[in-house]
Length: 440
Image 1: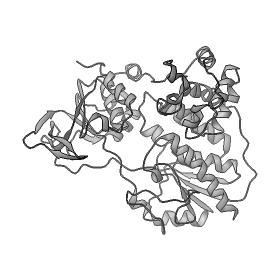
Image 2: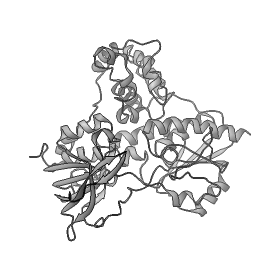
Image 3: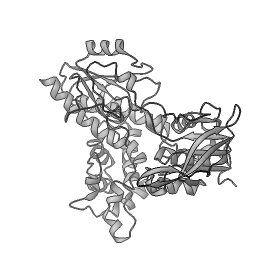
């Protein structure tokens, strides 16, 4: 029996997708910040890819200096609010909290961070002054976490910035690919709007960069170009029946869900293929959409899943079950998918070997592919002199400069797909790389 009732109204959808980390009240934030030990050699700072001075901003919250706390956060991470909600804090700052060594609940750093940044976003408090105008212009391709972070830092350094975004909304995966119970569209867009008002960078929406002609225009009109395009669509498996109705990418499903809410077409018996965090999100979301059964199917064992353990636990608590050591062979059905044919496998010296005669069929009416995203190789090949590695990632030097000197990059297009916080950290450093290039 389904753990969740299928939502038919906005209120029911909101109830099913209640925030995983709800915003704290002032009282909750005061008491939680009071627990912090303000460690001298705070391991939480080391664990944060952006190096936020966590003890300082927590002390500022405790002293009722919310503006100061927000500034401390944004001084290190321009995506401070988004990261407070979507970061895998259990693996990063909170996972490093010294309380873990005493079997005491770690400080809820993520929620405190979201609390402080939400305050200044709502008040539209001016916290920063941009640098003196250098007369230089930089084009940023993509208004995701990397592109926005790079734009903010470039404005602090005094350079003019235009962002070209293919879609009609900013924030990349924060709007189009993150589970709704982690961050709402309104929160993601509001943070980018706040940053745009702070720094005065321009965003041109529905302006995709699609080929060589577009790159040539950017090269002519701007002194440097930052590539923050992220990854592409879900990778195809290349097995029979993949074109059937009801088979779609897990990330594409999340995008529809974030925009259509309860009107999203969702399956009653869902199979999610994959063992990463996106697959876990898709499974949790399918449960919350009232699916009668949700099965996570992964070709290896549970210990080899790429997903964080807390994400897998959330999927299971939501009602999902798991099948391990199974390889999909075919999607069955006429026009619509009715099942997935699997074959069992075993790991021999790290390599998967199918078990002859072990085929079986798992019935379903929807399959979500959490099997990774492709790189945007065809687009990137339109940039002359740009080198990609064997996995389609952009090759850069220590300044995040590509092999075409005018182009810089950071985030998923360079690292292959990690976390929002990694993109924010890398893009900030890339902005300084651009600054050094422009000063030469």
